[in-house]
Image (tube, rainbow, N blue to C red; front, side, top):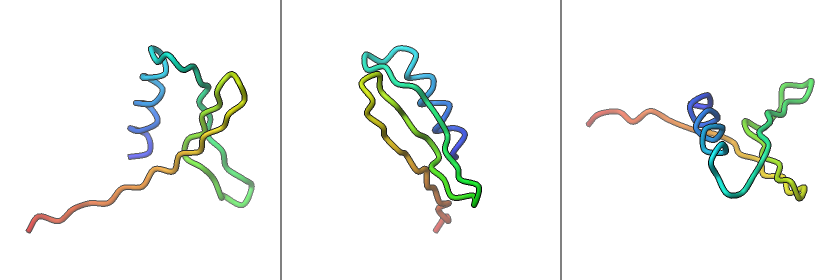
Length: 57
């Protein structure tokens, strides 16, 4: 799921009006943020991807 969301964001950044650079952040203790976007004016946006499977009823 993380990989799909990251690749979709990367794809959309190629044509988006608002430019941003895409990063991944993780500390040495394995704490991190799945996706970090940084805009040219210095704004930083952290995105944590969560997903779960739905069981058929």
